[in-house]
Image (cartoon, rainbow, N blue to C red; front, side, top):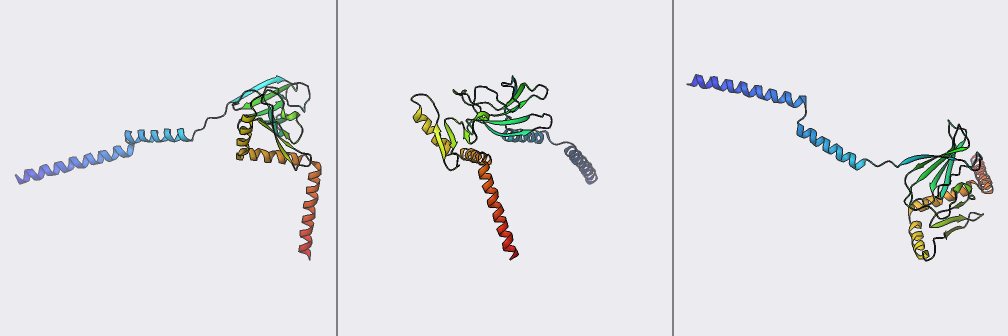
Length: 232
């Protein structure tokens, strides 16, 4: 009886050892389905949190009017503020960059450039969607004077000396002045508005030759003063 018990015990140990070895090989070969499913859920959740929708981009080709290579004006019913221009490698005509005049509340941007093959055609690329109706008075920022931005519900103007900044309500129709004042007050309090204001000041001063000359003279004098202090 004892011999039979020992034999059964050895057989049971062998079976258990083989089963453990099989489970180990199965685990290392492929992850458990439940773990794989859990990993997919985690990845999907992470992707849903971090993914951001790309702004809608559309391209429009219009006949230029007038046929002036320096004028990148596309009348589309909205007001724009020009904030930059550069020459690209594949086109001899400069590309102009515009923001919607409602910025920063409206994120739409526009690029305008003459067609390289046909200079009488303007190619405008819009990025984003307007969150407001078309402007009552259509004007393009490229035709405005330096230092002036047409922004609704207010306009920003800088005097010739660059010392005074004026915020003026634009024409919003009768009975809407109180609402416009509240809108301007809320907009001025935002950091985005201050950023736009700084950009307007920089653009104004950059186009002021007298200021740039005075700045260059002051910097040169300061550098010469420092150099003379080092010599003596």
